[in-house]
Length: 249
Image (cartoon, rainbow, N blue to C red):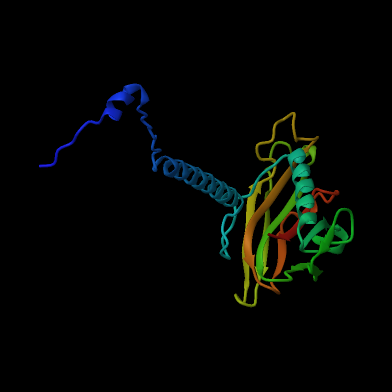
C-alpha cells in the first residue's frame, strides 16, 4: 500500500491559491442538425419549384401524343387581343418562332384560312418557313403550337324566330413522315353565340365568337402543320383576330 504525505508547501498554499479550469465542450451534433435543416429546406424549395413547373405545363399541355385534342380556351374579344399580344412577345423572344396572320377572300372560293407571314404583326425566324399554307418545323424538339380564329356570325331580322346558331370548328393538323398520315393535334367545336349576353357581345343581329387552341408537342424536323376551319364566310380577319403560330421551347 502506498502512502501520501502532505507537505508544508501544500498547507501554506491554501484553497485560495488553487485554480480550477473548466472547459465547456461544445456538442458535436449541433452543427449537424443545422446542416440537415438547411438541406431539408433546399429540398422543399426545389420540390415546390418542380411541382409548379409541372402544373403550368399540364395546364397548357393536353397531350404530346398525336391524335389527341386539347380543350380550347374560350375568351372574349378583349382577352383574345391580350392573348395575341402575349404570344407575339413570347414568340419574338424564342430563338425559333413563326407567327402568321389569317386572311380569307370569299371570291377566291378557298377551303381554308390563308396564312400570311409578311403582313401586320406576322413574322418568322430561326428556320421556320411557310410553304403551301403550311408551317414547316425546322428542327426536332419541343414546341408550343397555338392558333385562334374569330367569327362574326350574322343573321337577318326575318330569321330571328327560327334562327339556330351554326356550329363553329377549328383544327390544327400535323403531317409527319414518321407517322405517314395527317393527324389532329388540336381541335375544338362550339356553337356560335354560346354564353353571349344580350348587352355584351351581341351586336345587331349577330354575335362575336372566338376559338383559341394551344398546347406543347414534341415535333420532328420536316413536320408540317396546317389548319382546318369551317364557316369561313363568317371569319373575322381584322388584325390580331385570327392567327396561327409555333415557337421552340
